[in-house]
Length: 504
Ligand SMILES: [Zn+2]
Image (cartoon, rainbow, N blue to C red; front, side, top):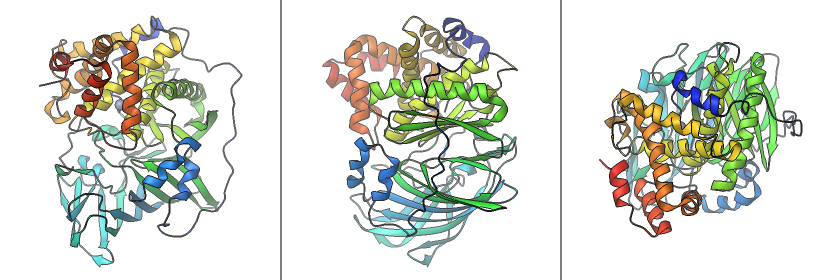
């Protein structure tokens, strides 16, 4: 996620990069029409092999499917009612016990419930045996007590119906899950299995101020039935659609990825551009075409920058979608939402400057969140602070080191909100006060990466970021893995630096 910038303090960036961000780029761009491909998707449940997912990956990454046959598979049938804010579905989840111990229970996260009970589950079955849905952790987790322990390597099929009433106003958790201004945004709208590790199931109570998802790579097949007038934008790729007078149906597939995001609006228009093997599409209400073009231009530059630095983006699509929210933007797998309020350049010319920063930030999450996941509740700095630093690298690559200093200044300014107190960046999200979280994770956090760059030397530091993405792509990393890799690459002792910035 990106928390809102305090506008007055962020003006230094506007000044230092003035003239560079606003209008879309030169006319040598490859504008392509929206896909009209409506080839039917395979209709079988839970295909035995994953070949169907080759089509959502660029060539270089398709071989990963051969190593992922035991990844969780979600098959979701989603109904968006004519009211749009009523969303219900049926999902079947094929789960393999990839742990070394038998599992007596499997958990699902129900994240919308952090802001009051919204997402409900009924008709829960495990291999056709009906079971109660037991809610825990302030109703943000559901425990499924298995009829028999699931042995290592064994599979089980868990099915359920789910339903939620999407809020029509900004409420808890930044309004990420919302139907407002005729735009529907479905953040974590279905029950999703969290990581199981040496601590067991990762189902801690989520604090309100942080990102929450901690999940393994999985495969998704989502059939969306929705009112005909909505333009749908979702994770993964569309592999089939039918259109009627009243209703439409669209089938998406995606994976390996961490989650599945969907947005919809009758107001959405879009622009697309191909970058390497990836088609980037920006969705926005038609009156904000200038901002939509800026999103597309920025995403192209960011993708090129990060492709070179962290390894190629693995997917053939990336969608950037404007939605109403109280954050700057939010990352999802192969998609990101961007705050609608930054799209209005007429109300405040600075909006487009913030929008550029948000796009560069959220695109970086496609590496440090979707490809390399870490525990966002236990170690939020490991992806958010790194992504802030990656955003700086976007500015460096696009505008040069000197012009990028405005963005560095924005970190000091955010940190100044807690008087630049040397609060460690390595604490769990819930251990910070609401006032501390943004300034420390998004302000002091990237300054640690700047210090790490200076200590290691730029060549070593760049090698570290590339090696980190490479070694932990499709997996889970933690701060110990990151710092050990750093010390290995620089062949140096970073304990003093870590003690100064990271450790409690
Ligand atoms: Zn973020």
